[in-house]
Image 1: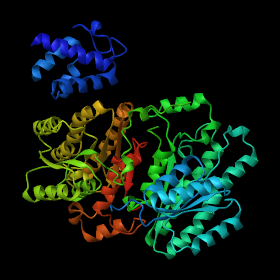
Image 2: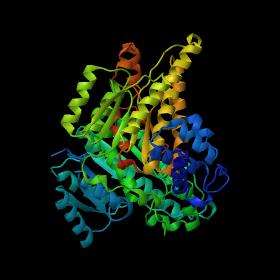
Image 3: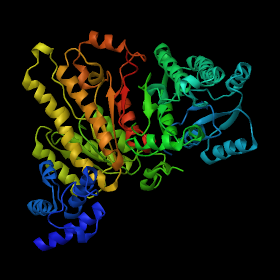
Length: 78
Length: 249
Length: 265
């Protein structure tokens, strides 16, 4: 299931941020690339919520500072 | 049939041939208002458009052509309007002109002309129409000013001042005639896609638009929508207000 | 040639219908009575579907919602939660999300007041008022605007008060919370504008509701005498401006506070 999440989440990141799936790894961080700025972060969170049918608390929205964290958070809500 | 927002409203809108006024005419017709559509000159095209709107929306759209700065023309037009069996209950002062110039480079003639067209003419027209509204139990006055009246933009001191004068007069009016059921409000558009912005450089327009919350330029229809609201009973307890329609400047 | 970028995201022209909220889905809080109730009714009349939020289950309210749905052809879904309970709010928002329908509009009406002069205002009262009038609204708005971001379109209307703009003796907590709500409105507009979400507020004046029913008549009369229109406002008149702000008529308005006060000076 962890692998499924990784692939699916990478696809969500790719679509929401407008970046190539190949560039997505655990270390990809908020504000490390121009595509992942504060405005994009909002859209990204909304996309993750829709894709996984979850509702993410504000604390976790703040905590979602990289792709690895995002996977953890998604797992937490499943 | 569902009631339309402006059913039973009989409105005079100035400056209907292009820009915001043209869009206002359409939106008012679509929402069920009868309109005396003012333009300076009667053209075949304008007459045809009024007729088309009348039949399309099952309302009466009547061209009413006169020069706003000619007091006698204005009086005759109002007399004509009075003869109609439809009683006027909405006035939209939309027509206006603009000449951008730095304060120190503003010619006196240009200053006076903008005050004449943008402030004095609507003031006098409002006097005529409010007199009728008071006799008939009420109405709504909608005056189109500008964000320039509030913000004092460089290059717009004369234009802004003329609109600020109109804004102030409208608010004072609202306090004088409120008890007799006449409301008066102001719309302050931001940067709107009309011929008027031809006097601003592309750079200035783009910068201003980039600075709005909505990140886009205003369209005539955006302003028309607010005028419909202020003319309608949706705004029945709203008077003396200035509504900025500027995409969040 | 400037191309208005928002036009690319505009839905088919809902203004074709004469109903100004045709097929819009709205969340309205505080629907049990007063302004919230009239807003619910007017929204349904104008073609909207509504998640109608109230504090606790109520038979009369349920049947009112059913009547509105039957009469106007849309759906009206009662949702109950206590504004002082963050978990309850989260649960309610989650249930809205799970309905899988686009959220077009949020109207934050719910609020209360604990009137007291400044030296009689306890810190507890102040916190209580802020809990319901500000913190709950912010939380609800956070959840629902996140959903709106998906369509890159939506709007929020916050019901503030002239009290928040002008101050009002005896209403320190209330006026402060409403002033804060206005600050939130403007900041949200700045942040969410580029995501296609408009945020505005209304500031009702002296309105004929239960909240004003307990105000001494002579004080009420003196406030009414300060209005240009010389009368109380009706809750339906407040609803009218809220409906306008939710509709496409106000598409280019954001970050604004509209006073619905009969022209108060």
